[in-house]
Image 1 (cartoon, one colour):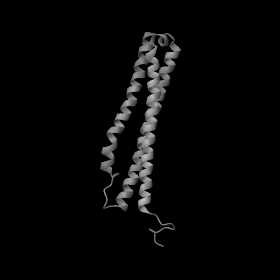
Image 2 (cartoon, one colour):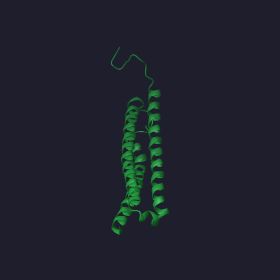
Image 3 (cartoon, helix red, strand yellow):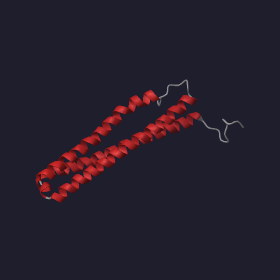
Image 4 (cartoon, one colour):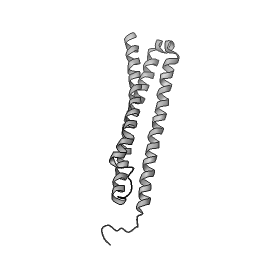
Length: 147
């Protein structure tokens, strides 16, 4: 048995399909988290907007909502950045595997293709998170400067 052979036969196509399934699963997970945290932040901003007078009169309620929103947004930023890094790692592994095992096929996970397809979407997702962070910081500044 040579170094390339193993005890179990490996079907390269099935292994590549496993990479593709893993990448698609990670991508779906990223967007599910993104959507859930977008809803959570929208509810907090909505609560602040619906009854601003009553909420702003109670200093602790307003600051609690602002802090909760800021905390959720910070966690959202970290989760999003980490999720995209993991997705990128899986895409790099799949791209290397495809180059090695299927050199004559187009490589959807090659360095150029993967970079072009995900970079701007990643930037937009992070921009959305930063917008919420700026909203909470701005509202907190207004609340503290008026209070």
